[in-house]
Image 1: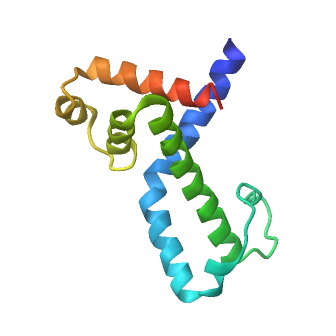
Image 2 (image 1 turned 135 degrees about the vertical axis):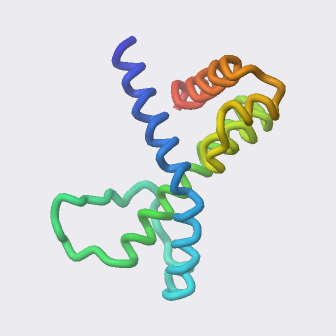
Length: 133
């Protein structure tokens, strides 16, 4: 159980981190597409690019673009799974918390929940999505 919980924690932490930068990444992708219009028509295999910050290997704007697109796809795919598995309200609630960075107390109040109920629901929904991945 510890191993599974550790894997869940890593996935959930990666998702939350990606959500925090999602909007900025979307803006940066739009800027790159404006600067390099050919990027839009290029075919990429999702999840194939692994950024390596340990060494300078001459990566440039194309690799940045691909990395950003992979991260954006991760967030969007996860929210799609949340909606399919847990429902539209779960998706909206989690979007408010993780992408829009609204305070838990305010989100709980907006959804007619206590903060404790909100935390329980968030944990339950993330487990449903990441434990079945």
